[in-house]
Image (cartoon, rainbow, N blue to C red; front, side, top):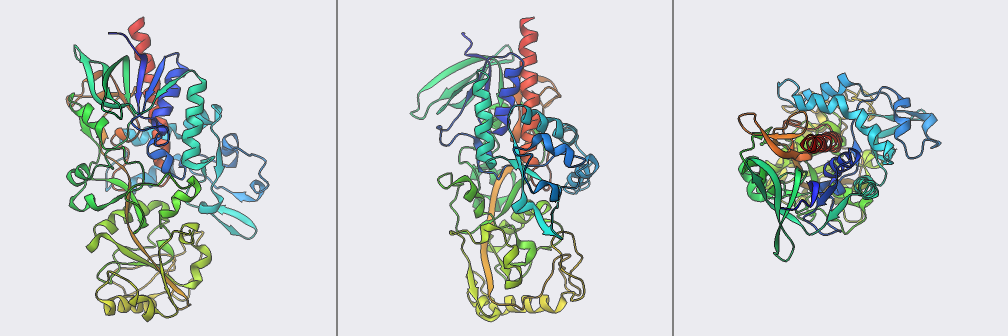
Length: 503
């Protein structure tokens, strides 16, 4: 049995690469194995907009993280702050009454230091002016606690992390899928692999780190764990996250941990491909999302509203509303806007491939809403909404403005405006799943635990495979930060275990 490396990392997304970089820092020899080819590598991270949520207290905390700290907009920018208490409150808002988990506290406590660590390794960030700020009184005002994204978004993040990993002496092997873990006297000592042509081999190492994502690309596992509607969801990211890493760990007696019924999802263009599309430029890929619903209303196939579109900033609702849409009849909805909000709609609504219908009257618009059989009910829903809108409170998209409705069975709490300015537009949406919440239990070193709490020696996990981080929702940008936090921890833990072995 000849070791291929001290540590083998399975996967090549943000979490896996953070683990690999951290292990290299501690002197380990690291090999990354990636199921896809070079073009498809990078996991779900490549498909993201690169936003990262973390604790910061002022503009000064952000300066060391920026690619361009001399950006002329910065003196006129109010980033506000995002405290640990606020991060805690945001996570608790999705916990359905649960206290913060151990994993959530780790995410909060280590979020900023992990961002600094990335920046110190040359991985820099940019303010999200386009999607997270509004210009008000000559200043850029950020909202929702989410301020920075990776330079080059998700693709840029993965490319930068891979560059750091390779410069530090790491190695990567593509078209190399892990199929089964190899154990000796209860310790994980290697992994069986298979290439794209079906050729099989075995690789041996002192430790294995699983960073291979969740099970969102498996219709069977989505249906088994999340619910009967979920085999119909579109996959926003890679087709490669089929849950094989999870299965390998569970086969060794690892504990299922976390909220398996939960996932990160978002409203998506109904007519997007069934999987994410890396063939288009990364800055266009996000345009299949449709997350400006808070500026209008959504109707299901029965012609009825089904969520409070303005209950909170979209950072805190899009994951829940993606779920709500997939659970509607026909697994779709229509997002409806009038001309007053055109200037506020994100670029994803004017993207060349965006699907929508348009009309000069509401009656004509409703007739174009394919899939809604009861057009009269749809028209009545819009009419009732118009009558219920608070006409006195000013509209302000930079705050939760309290401009809501009264007298409706399902209120809209903020940003409610009557539909009274043509042309009217409607966009068909469905649910796109990004990542799953159920995973494995790990200890403070990133070691995977069995159901009885014992450590599976030689086996570590990070990224989506760490359960307990998210429950019934997700504050936008937390996923990449979680991947980096738990990836770094697993890399350090695996490297420490190698040192102890050699001591």
